[in-house]
Amino acid sequence: MKKVFINIILLSILVMADYNRTSVGTVIDDSTGLEWQDNYSDNNNSIKNLNWKEAIAYCESLILDGNNWRLPNIQELNSIVNLESYKPSIASVFENTTDQNDYWSSSTLVDDHSLAWTVSFNFGERASHHEKNNTYYIRCVRDRQ
Image: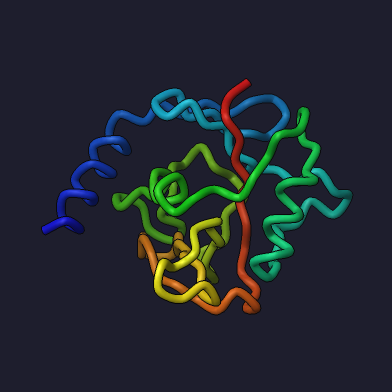
């Protein structure tokens, strides 16, 4: 029952989401006040595939139109899943998303700290968990400045 309630809340947030793409390649979600990384600040502009600790460090050191970036928690990452889209199942304003693998969240499992929550944008699989030493994609977030 709790899971159904959480999914209803997340879907209502998604319906109310109002996304805007900026000129520097970030996406602002006016409904949550979050700014999402969609372009990358390094020279090869590729989507990052890192282990969990590397993902946290990457986001914390990211300089993309300023700083204060972080790895999103699982609720934040779930908020950009679009169940009406397919491969990738994310709001269409995001241009740089792969549907080939999961994306890390900063959220660790309560019962097992060697695992962290991930989201797949393939079919909109919201949350699963994996060993932190595995490599997955990342999408950094920050509170809107």
